[in-house]
Image 1: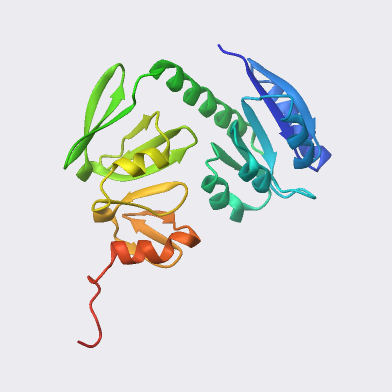
Image 2: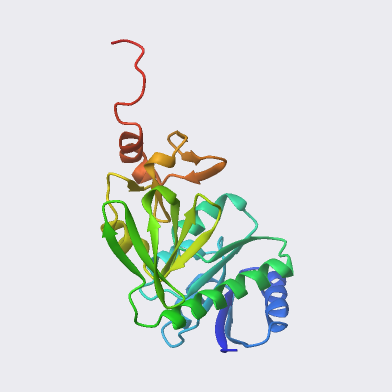
Length: 246
């Protein structure tokens, strides 16, 4: 098991100690620093390169979200907050997970294991290309050493996970690919796919409903980024909406 390093930041002492206690029970982890605020984390990152940041969001001076948005080199981010309305913002900055206080220890452990899985996939793929555009109706992803074809029509949406994307398929399965969302966006046809936020690309043909704040793909609701709203509605709905007057 590879050893992972981490930094904790929370302005409430009880939660700093609680997180430290929970994480200390997970083998293969080393704490580099425990911080009272995001400014301390920022200073620590000048000399330390942790694998994971465990961050509260609302902290004095600089929020956890503001800190992450300022970083050029991104560790794996796990946000911990008392305020569930920050969840969408957390995933907008490619956080691995968002955990609501009070902290269930099993959720924290699961988030750390998610980081381990992402690192394992990255190491397994190595420098090999993880994504190859094929033709007008499909692309290939690398899986278990082979390239596997994925048809556009089988894709519901694509989710960003820092250096990876998770492709959600119509049959309920998910595929992890070592390519970032910006890279895959540039290669996929805009006639089929559209980016709706910093975190999601959707298959326009799978959208069942759309409004100014979110869209539906079946029973799944995905948030639309504020700056993406107009272009998403125009691209998905276009002239297809039935007009009251002609």
